[in-house]
Length: 382
Image (cartoon, rainbow, N blue to C red):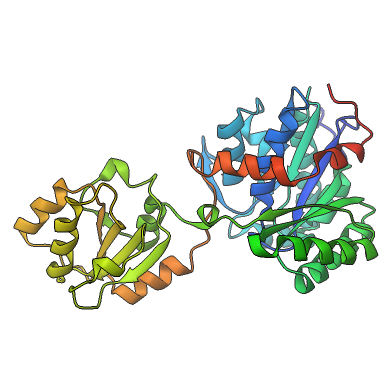
């Protein structure tokens, strides 16, 4: 049987496509794609999605699939095979395998990306392409974000985080890489902008971007809930064991962290709402105070308690904990280690984040100039 000729570019040259890049990791590419997808669905009946190269993945049917592709599929039912939404996953040995035989593996990777895009864009009116970091990520195996955008014939949006100096510098640097590949940058989005700085940053960012010939597509306000982990994410991060409320841990979030090393007198009066309390497992006085307080308040200030140092509550206290509506988690490490691990977390939106996903859609709908993106393709809305 004759070998199939490998593709060096997609067959689909007609479906409009936009490549969403970031100036760095975790600048808001997935948030932008999640919101843009919903906004585009209001104008086009069929929207596609692909993340050609993924770095955070899970195994599905023996295949490594990027978590962001799973998020988009589960949120919107994209009607594309998940393997085509996430064709390449970068595992720990990927770069070494590529460098051992770059000529053969490079051709295979290009073919894989092109085939996946053709499937993802099949019968779609518009296709979103999510990048994986800044424009240069992937250069070591000759599939940088800028190169992939060129390969797929896409125009690009650059997402950066709030500010004036550094974000503009980073946008300029990324635009230079897209320019080098001949990819048109249709605009920039500034993410995670503090509400009280929106007008100021809009004014000066617009002036700076105009000098770079980059339109400002919008500013996205910073929202605490979007960067707050739920308690299940925290439990996984600290390798904790739930003592109660097993089915109710995941949806809950917190806004503040307090380490319970103080005396219990007046303690609860100073704790703000939605607080995660971290305290040694032998501080039964604090635990008892929280449990006693719970019965007198319809909505307590404590969102969760993490008991540290591997000290389990006494049987009598554990019986009360099991009956409580406040989640308790036991960990083997000390309080400050737990707090440090939580503080260093990178929080990603997950399928089922019912408090976050509608908010993301609303933020994009209200703050991004979607028509300007559409006008870049001179499209007629269907």
